[in-house]
Image 1 (cartoon, rainbow, N blue to C red):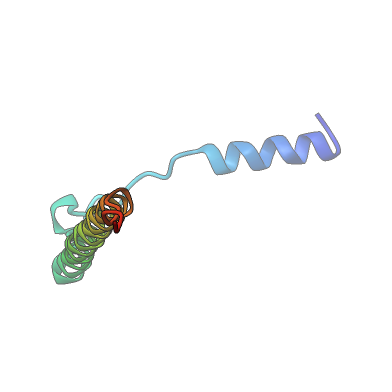
Image 2: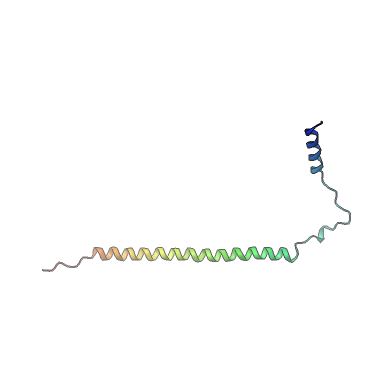
Length: 87
């Protein structure tokens, strides 16, 4: 293999090869520390606040719909009640 194909093959082989870990590397020493905790806590707090806001908005829309239905029912009842004819 020569030319561009050979160079591409060599680059793929080099990138695909897995490096050997250093013998003094301790896998247990890699932890998220307080930064990971803070990020997770922040995301969880934002989700909780968004849920509370969504519930409040849905409740407000539902109440507006109920009030609109009540007003329409009162308006229809007032329209059907006609004053008695004068003699």
